[in-house]
Length: 337
Image 1 (cartoon, one colour):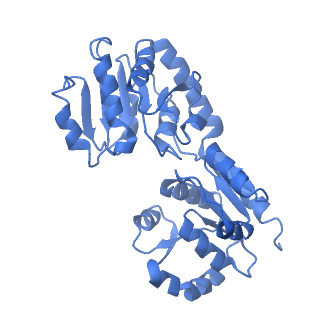
Image 2 (cartoon, rainbow, N blue to C red; image 1 turned 135 degrees about the horizontal axis):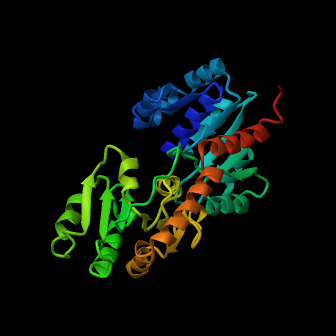
Image 3 (cartoon, rainbow, N blue to C red; image 1 turned 180 degrees about the horizontal axis):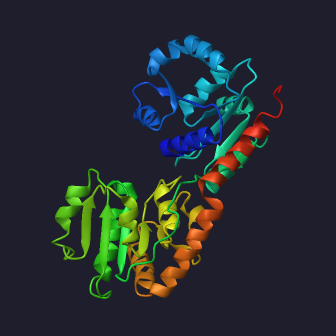
């Protein structure tokens, strides 16, 4: 969600909006916001932050926002405090893997929120069910991609870009690779990224007979070059993935995506059209899906081309900005001009 919020803010500034990025002063997200050239305001977390609400309201009064878009639960509370008795709309964007909760307090907050943005269909449905009277819209993340999709490589290479965390499904991919080893000539599986599981998985390659098949290059300096060398992109997550930047990046590169059917991935990957969906944690199904694309370059190219076209029409930066702006316009329609 940090990438979602930062990408949106940069695009809003590019389109002429006056934007400030607020958050905890010690947050690495604010550091990244500064690096991107965004105007930033930070405050202390915890009790100190709550005690500074008076000064925050004064700062908000000077800035006079038309919309405050909160991307976390604590930011939502702060937004309602800052917007109280002001001509300002509060929008809550939610991209958590956990579904929103109902109850009296949640209903009270929802009644004072001008619009909710859900990043996938599951969250959209949950909001509409919990708060029938609320304005709810689904806005998927948009990303920048290459001007053109490079041709697929001749070699049967499957690639993964993700932090090495159990939820990302690296172990399932290694199991699938072991099943394919020997049946797909020239098979290579490359997993870029860093994380706590990296070294443990590296030690497992030799006992599994995967030393010549699986590569862990670590953090790559040029992700686009890494993806360009792969025929298929893999997102085998076991959970989470409310927003999947990796899936969108593979699509923008014209690579078919083999993904697990969790979170928002089914919103992005059309099974049999732009890629293939498999049950999470099912190494046998993952191996079969990878085999069907690695052994059939024409099929991989057709699905990749369809994925690129879908990214261009639905998940580019322009669509991301315009869909969000439509929510803002509806949320502020009742405010004095």
